[in-house]
Amino acid sequence: MAILNPFDRPCRPCDLKRLFPVWVVVSALLLSGAIEMPAQTKISREYQIKAAFLFNFAQFVTWPPDAFTNAAAPFRIGILGEDPFGAFLDETVRNEKVNGHPLVVQRYRSAKDIKDCQILFVSRSESRRVKRILADLKDRNILTVGDMEDLVESGGIIRFSTEKNKIHFQVNLEAAKNANLTISSKMLRLAEIVTPEKD
Image 1 (tube, helix red, strand yellow):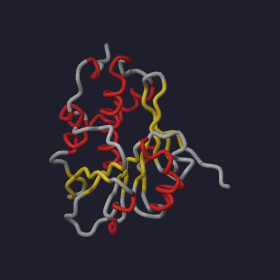
Image 2 (spheres, rainbow, N blue to C red; image 1 turned 30 degrees about the horizontal axis):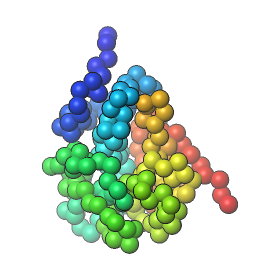
Image 3 (cartoon, helix red, strand yellow; image 1 turned 90 degrees about the horizontal axis):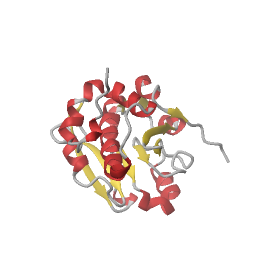
Image 4 (cartoon, rainbow, N blue to C red; image 1 turned 135 degrees about the vertical axis):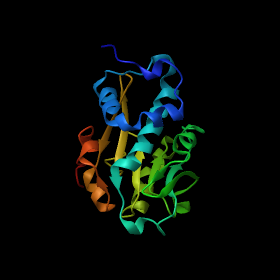
């Protein structure tokens, strides 16, 4: 049976959300290399896929109740620094909810601006400040995500990597525990677990 490659045509947020029930399968295919991103559109497809991952991380991670100001408070996916997603991430989460919390995207110029945030994508533009940023956010209920090489070693929770046009992700379980976040075993089965060396 031939595998339909969804990246042979432009990705639309509604396509990715419609595939949500089979996200684990699609993710496994992405990680195993059965689905590849065409080289000529690598950058745009890369961040479309990462936007879909961010949306789905919200479904596979559990936050403590006090991570929200109230039961109807928004679930915020933040972007710190330069935004590589454009409007695609906003479209991906539009009209979606997580446990009754409406999903919204918020952009931040500095870590000091971050108040209520559940998932934070730290852009590569912040690479020189990443250790300081993560230190400032330590022990807060924020799932820190990015694609910088030293992100998990610096205390981040999830790091995306791209190898031969395939998306992978690493998880720092100790950092997740410090943030009082519980990551689903289904998601962890697709991840590389990383334990940073202590100084």
